[in-house]
Image (cartoon, rainbow, N blue to C red; front, side, top):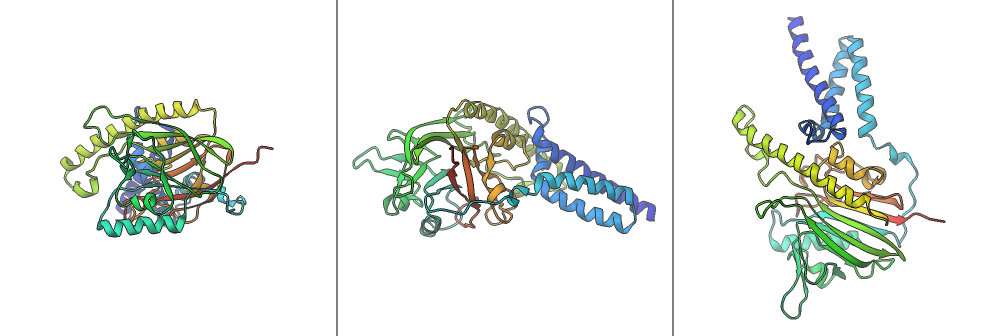
Amino acid sequence: MRRFLWFLFALVDGLVLGLAAAGWAAAHIDPRTFWWPALAAVGLPFIALALVVLAVALVMWKRWGWAGLHGVVLVVLALRLVPVERLEARPEPAPDDLTLMTLNAPRYGASAERLTAAVSDLLATERPGLVALQEAGAEHARRPPYRPVIASYVQPAVDSMGYRLAIPPDWETELPLLVRLEAPGGFAVLEQTQHVFASGPEDEGASRYVRTHFRWQEREGVHYNLHLRSFGEEKPWDAVRFLELGTWLPFLRQYRSAYQRRAAEVEQIVARVEAETLPVLLSGDFNATPDNWTYRQLAQGRTDAFRVAGSGWGGTYRADRPLVRIDFVLADPAWEVVTAHVPAVEFSDHRPVVARLRWRDTE
């Protein structure tokens, strides 16, 4: 009986070790070559917790060799998962810092009045100087008085809270920027372009970005507001039945396609970003965790604001059970991250990321 129990334990243990290896390696594997490790990467923190439990069991059974192997694996995972950068001293916040908020803000789950009040409360509390929104349709009205129009639950920000909708007058976009008129440093938008990677009119979840050339505190930079390819409206946890393979296969195909197409799109975005001659800020909904290849491509050579200066877990999706971090603020070395946090919200299925930034001293 003991041998049989050990066999079952070893089977489960081997599976968890394999998932840990796949999840760790996903950051270095292009999904167009080998895509399924990206699925393991999503659950890597929870896989690490499972390994801790298994390691404790091995110690209790005095399986020292196996326990040592688990210890090595856990150290390797800790180097990836634990934000040791936070041990470095951070500068004190100052009134003239640039506060950037990124938020995927679709209408979600409540009445229009409650949504409007919740968005207004969030902006009044955080007072970001720059707000990068995703899934919040915006345009300038085609008839007099030609006022800027944004999703109704965000409209009070423009009408009465001192924000300007920073998009060209002939635009329609799902990635609008709001600039607080009295933000310290005088944030000025100089030029904007947008790009959508849709393969056709039905490809609504395609990756897209808005590039904004700006001036702040008399220095120029570039901000990219990103919304990377999603997996579609229907989610596996709503339709998949664990014991029915036929319910899994459509989602596996859907996820494979999304991972592979997103990788190609991110490669083009990275090429565009690397061609910039000005300091770059990237923010938005990446639809990928920090252990995935697409995040690693975008974050290379940049600072993840929450990783270095955040507090707590920092999960952004889903807002009611934020198990994973898929929304980010990334900054070039020209920027110093002062603080970062993830406020709890109920009006969206994403939580926002709020980061305070400042230029590094160039002298």
